[in-house]
Length: 80
Image 1 (cartoon, rainbow, N blue to C red):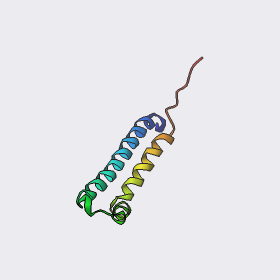
Image 2: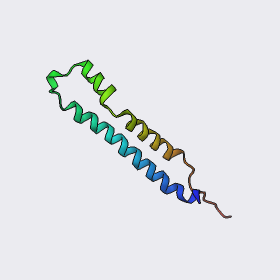
Image 3: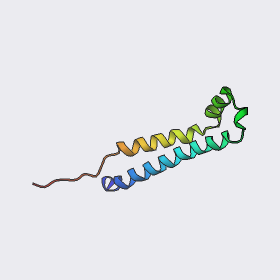
Image 4: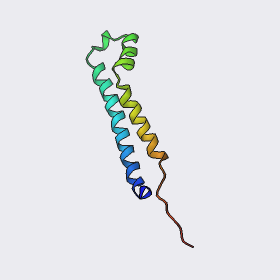
């Protein structure tokens, strides 16, 4: 039964992973827009990426996408 459901599970994991990664990147973009561009420095960018980016969200998204590719595909038997 797991092999039958793995196709849908793979797609769901892929979509959830992409959604988590998009959320992480959009959060970073909105945080960076709060400071005027002339007031930004290299340390600001490092701090924004290091502290304000929801790293947990990004990592979970990465693993969901990776898992969606490594789950076993449907077992299709070819008859001869």
